[in-house]
Every structure is written in structure tokens, then in C-alpha cells.
Length: 114
Length: 112
Image (tube, rainbow over all chains, first blue to last red; front, side, top):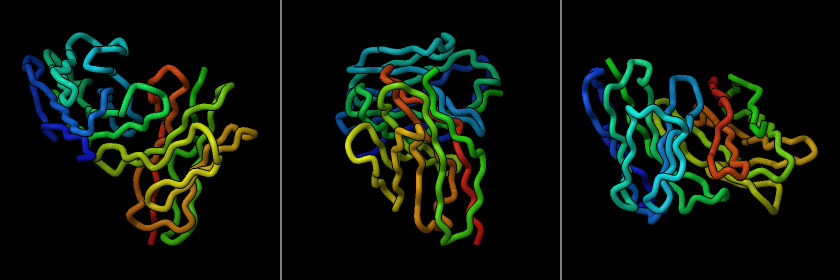
């Protein structure tokens, strides 16, 4: 299995809702990442998990809460989002956290906040 | 600041023509450089990467890139493009802070 699987593919939520995005990989990768991508922009790093521990938080607002229950699974919990949070949310994984490792990306969750 | 720059926002080429997408970096030491491709509404796929050794790197889908330290460049090339190559292409770097950071991207359009 050489894929990163993200669910759901599309999500529409209200500003008072609580929802979660899920990311799963079975490649034995020990580093996992959340990126946010606005339309016609490059992906921007949000969080890095290494060996199931949060190692980088790029000053992301607390309405985004990441969780790594085990080495194969990464969640992003969403609460009280704003319309400007609408974006494509990409999960990625790499063999380890080092510089030389390329990332494998999932196909993303298209989030719309109404 | 350490960064990569993609000077071309949009490039249009004819099917069967050759392609070169530009990427320049600013960094004193040898950077870790990557090229990714993103089809509309999809995730990103790694085409190739460079961090040492042979400066001409072969990737998937017939792409190659050449690292030129004298020009601070890592341009992506393909000898003959196919309509399926139409996508957004991102040059990316990891300058030692273990965070993969992307250039602004180049949108490639293929005309018949």
C-alpha cells in the first residue's frame, strides 16, 4: 500500500459545527503532516507529527486541533471555523522527519465553511 | 530569506513540444529540492528530488531536472509533453528546518 487516504473528500460545515478530517497511511511512515491550500495558492504547512508526537505547529488557530492516535492515523478536529477557513486540506506522510524524504500526499478534503 | 522562486505563473505549450519549468533557490548550502505536480482538485505527486550526487535527476512520467549551482536553479524538463501533463507544478525545498515549503507554482496548459 503506497497511498495516503483522506476522508471525507468533501465536507460542508456550519460555523458552529464540530467535524473531523481523517488521514490514514499504511506505509510505515513515521512522520505525518497537515497542509492547507487555498485556491490558486501553494500548500501551507499547518502541523507536523513525528513518531506520533506533535513536533511543529505553525501558529495555527486553536479551532484546528490535530490528533495522532497511532502511527497510521492522523486526524484534524475542526470547531467554530470561519468562512475563510474554506480550503483544500492535504495530509502527507514521509518515511521519517529528515530533509531527504519526499512526502506522499493524499488527495485532500475539500472543506467549505458556510 | 531561504526560498524557492517560480518566475512563471502560467505556461502554454503545444502537445509534443518540449517543456522547461523554472525554479530558482536562494540558499548558501546545497538545498534539498523537489518537484511536485498537482492535477485539478487533487493532491500532490512527487516527480523527483535532489539533494546530492548527479546533478541531472530522472523522475517519473518522463520528467527530469538539472541542479545548477552556478545559476541557483533546479529547472524541470520534459522532451515531449502530452495533454495529460496539464497541471500545476510546484518546486519545493527543505532548507534544513525539516519543513517542506513550496514555491508559488506554475500552471501548465497544453494546446492540441
